[in-house]
Length: 172
Image (cartoon, rainbow, N blue to C red):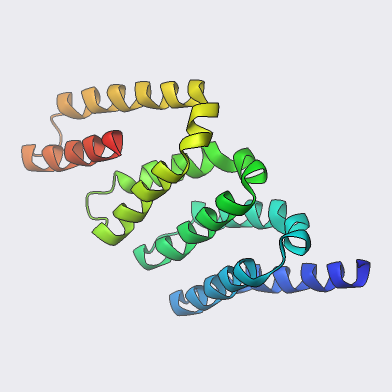
């Protein structure tokens, strides 16, 4: 067991080093390898590594700059939430903050936006367990929407586009 755990640790470290590549296609390959590992790995063998995977994936998610990397990253979080929800709960607020941030991007492709909204729905039990976080987030939404309406720096069509993103996210 210990030898296998060391091999898995090295394997995962190799995977996360691959995610540090400057090439988007390389990152996509390593994300698909990680997703496959999570899909086929036995829960009892994978679960000891989920805290590290969540930590590394959250760090990766915080630095994503390309739309193409969003869906595979989000799908990994979805999988972890479904199978390892108690472990995912620790990262829930941070992941949701990142998802909300992306959902407010007016240029975000519909495929990404739809997956983000799907996540919001899938996380329903965790939302209910974190009512204070949910209420705080709604308060921030309303404050940000008011500030957006009052901000005269952007032209009206840009403000309307941003406001629609807020409304979409708010109603998801």
